[in-house]
Length: 207
Image 1 (cartoon, rainbow, N blue to C red):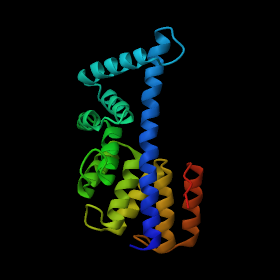
Image 2: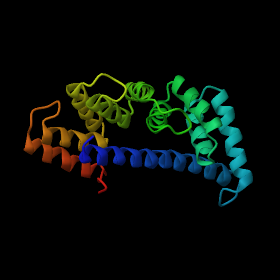
Image 3: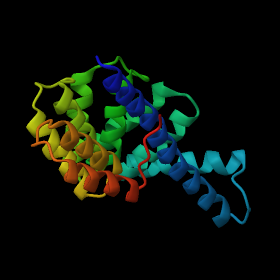
Image 4: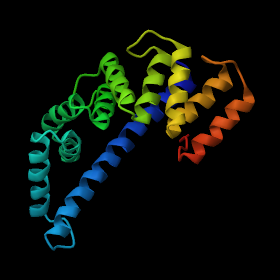
């Protein structure tokens, strides 16, 4: 693996953590909403327990987005034994964020054995469910042959799909593809165009 590829792989790992934190933030907002409805100003341990109970009930009632949020709460509490089955339930029920998060977990081996093939499969499900980041991550799998047969053209197509849906990583990776001629003809103008789109979408590469 070249130094550039290694740096990009490290960037993906960091992004995985940022994504999980974002999902957890949504979960905490949900807990605070329950607290406010109960008349308090902050999420006390009791209100958090109430949030977990409500999310668990909603999850059992086949509100599969609640399964994913509940999983994120347990992940934040470092209880992957509870988090992973809930992410799976959310994904199986059609919640794309649950699928995308499972892809991230399998990509890095967090709470599950590291498995690039399973990661790619979950990214594919997320992409099919309309999760832009799932498309970009699946594109990376195809571009580099992680868990799937390497297909740079397919990877570039998925980067394009993710970018068109507003995912900054997809735009950034597509820029790199045009710069190097990976899966698309080398084109410096398009490389700059998609780099600008990536920045506009909020993506900033860490060096």
